[in-house]
Image (cartoon, one colour):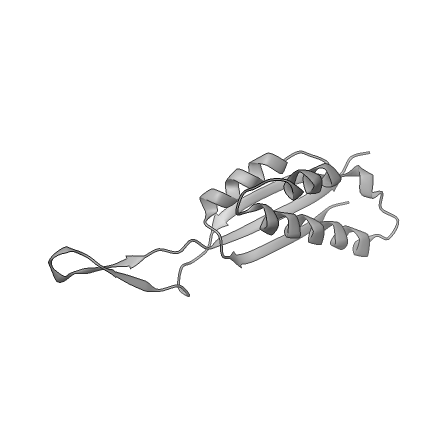
Length: 114
């Protein structure tokens, strides 16, 4: 049984989100949630919410699922298009450059160990 949860256009840079995703990859879902509870990184609350959503999806898809057997099977972060956050910064000689604000698509897939 596989359950999946995706956060699209999360307002965190992919580099910061990947640091947190690498911490929880391959761990049991309960262990990953406990680890994220006490991790002091910007992406920890975002990833925690996604894992909680994936656990809720697993419970909805098959009510008899063993929640202790769920583990983070696959997780990855992709860069989202940056079309919503447009800012400009003044530069030398009267020019301006765009300020890039990081947006991410974060995907977590939970599997069941038998």
